Length: 241
Image (cartoon, rainbow, N blue to C red):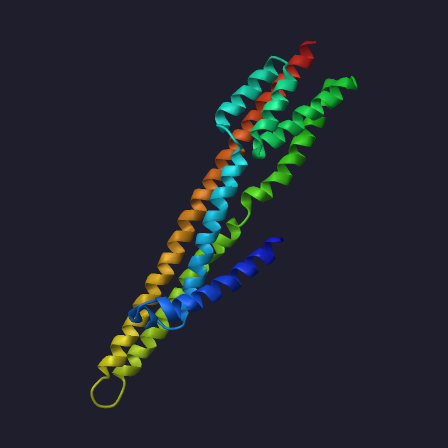
């Protein structure tokens, strides 16, 4: 499913669920926040869904075992020219790092058999690694833009609800004779509830975005470091020969 289709479908489902929650599950004092609460609920549901999806996806991207241990073993086997063993480790590990390193090592075995100059061998390995990384990166960064967007939108939606609530409050104060205490309290309640809802969705989105970006950065750093070490080992070994 394309990313845009997934996001639109999720938004539609979140709105339907939010309507149900708003009219049947929420206490009256929260419903006093008005229909803006429905949109804030939908944004919160979307954020929670993205958090669950990203948590599982990034865990899968790391592979089946310890990523640091796997990378050390692959580098060690490469240094010992045990390329087949290193490739089997990559297949067993899976994930982004396993797929990228497997592509690079398998390509090296192919170009090595062709007796190509060392410069061309290393260049070909780098090219394949870059292509494999380019294919894997969108999977790592999927939905991060959506989470970041929700962080900005939730704040604005909450502010909109706050503004509408304050308008209702000032209308109650501006009424002829004594101020309408009921409408005044409803306006203030609407403003505060929407402020709280907007802040909840925005804070959750910002924290989730930063956590996932940090995980992606750490994974790509470990991958780049392992690729660099392996390329240097291959270059040194072939040059020595």
